[in-house]
Length: 427
Image (cartoon, rainbow, N blue to C red; front, side, top):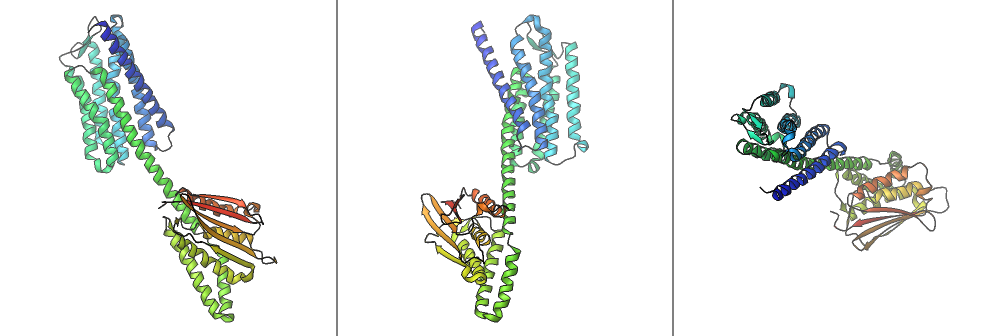
């Protein structure tokens, strides 16, 4: 190979080494700071990427000095490191796989076999420094295999083969994504180490290990993020379920008391209030198990049932207006009814000469639908106990799941206007 070709090859090696260093360093940083990775994954990737960074540094030094005869002693150290460190990754992988399968490491013989093979490799590397039988360097600093070089490669291949056999055996326990990730990690390394037995591809071992590890990291990271998102959704669903249960005890007590007295004073009205109250309760209980958006007409029925019960108690103190020509859309459970309940609870004043007016309107807009609830009460913003805002925040959380929004503004004549935007195709 002429000098020009040799220089181009060296530059190529430097470029690959620099790129790998940056990628592995990025993997190390990501492993350290990403909140989605669990503890065992963090330890595995931090340990693995740390060893790889040292290996890549050794690889770059190797490229720098392999043609310099005066630095043969450095080359020996680099060859030692480049052989030992990739092998140390295997026991770390074994521990990680066993953790993923919830196995006791101390009682598992595979872990101890890995340690024994690493110790055997270390001893062979020490022997290699004292004899030319395994490998040696020429006066020109050229690496030459000895007759027993295969003895050095054997423990390394055994380490890879044992881990490969373990993940195939435990593939059902690991799951599809982790199984594929570990295969991507091990197979290229197995191939490159097998080639190293017959031809010199020593400098490519670090490259193969780093790329494989980064690919595995990407797959596992994706799986961890998916698990994290699923957990967040479950938490949001739990919060929504808890919010659904926030039926006011005093409202139930007052309603039952009203029905009690109406049974004697106005039996027909008592029957109607009982029916409306039953509808209200049924809708609340249905919302507990409902996670997906429901037709708006169901939410409207729920709201009407609630208002019918309240009007039976307060009669002329509460005036309600519905202007809902547009109903062909879906909303999260308990979107409209809690808004109207807030308007009634924080706006109704039985001592006032003016009744509370509550209006519910719907409109079709570009790419979505709008629900507008307005009242003539005191206004939510004037309340300092925070309770109205709890209900509104619960509604906002449910709306965020379908990319809907909730906005609050003051009513010109006093009171509050709450607008909800529901995008189309939110099922």
